Length: 465
Ligand SMILES: Cc1ncc(COP(=O)(O)O)c(C=O)c1O
Ligand SMILES: N[C@@H](CCOP(=O)(O)O)C(=O)O
Image (cartoon, rainbow, N blue to C red):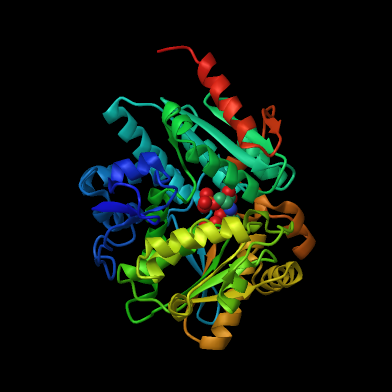
């Protein structure tokens, strides 16, 4: 299995190269050259999430690692998940389900991929005798998951950028209380989009990128997407082969829903993929009008989705334009020069065949949280609430089974949850432990040069091995 860049000008890479590079050298995102086919999970072994993960992910690895080694690696990655089912499916209405993806160590869906990614990276670096500098951008959850997955790992420095004052206190402390020397939390005076732009700018500087051996842990890294395809399979398997569920996915950077799309391209039969957005509704506007046009980010109760530049939309554009790298390059150039790009009608039509988008307001999400709590006693987080509202709307429109991805634990967002339901969610013990201790962070202006300087100074002061 080889990987190609969405911008068409990078050499093909194997899985390990794509994993360590993160972003392709031409600025594009890696995509598999062909889609492995897997219409469903084998009937046996059933239940075991790690076995399913190894089975779904193996074809993407090109034999490095092979399925047995990958199985051992993912088994270790998912061992500390709090629910024995890893990704349990709960019924919340008529043919309406919640896929709970928050039982990992940092209580958000990011743990599913990050726990695997860190192990794959460490393995690759050891094999090659290399070290790496990870630079990541986070609106809260990716950073927490990355800190947890990479803390204390040999040969890996993690610099994680988050928008200052725009994530929840819990999310911030999950990153800033890490005591390990290889973890560096940096608050940027800007939005998540600014932090993501800084990451891309650092990768765009070829000399800096090579000198510091940069790697990425955001969903621009293909390995993240692969690991996130697995739970679409396990959810579908639980509902049975006759059911072709739709999936409602709270969406920001478009990585999680792209993993669902990837599963459908692999042959998993499903209904619609529902893009559930908050007031930062660029994707809903794009599907409606055909124009991708970021507007200013507004803060909401679902801060992890306060994103206007959805990185992985580039992957969708590439795939649904018939893998037209020239078109992707033109779109990205237009975005830079004019602040928007227009989807060709045929590409828009193909996207609409598979995806529906619903914009959900803060009040609608809070009402849904309250209603579910009153009906079932269940407390959901504000991102999941956006997914529930969008999922129900789509179910009313097109019918069928609907699986809503429950992307975070409500304890991560106590203010919004308490406002909606009148009570806060119980805080799991594993979170309590992580919130203690002194916070360690730097606040930097919205400047790639400032971040580059911190990384360079740290490298210069690192004791030589
Ligand atoms: C809790 C939560 N839900 C949803 C999302 C959106 O996921 P994606 O960026 O993959 O679209 C995020 C952030 O990525 C998140 O942290
Ligand atoms: N919502 C995310 C934003 C980054 O998304 P990623 O999936 O590309 O890492 C976050 O919580 O940081």
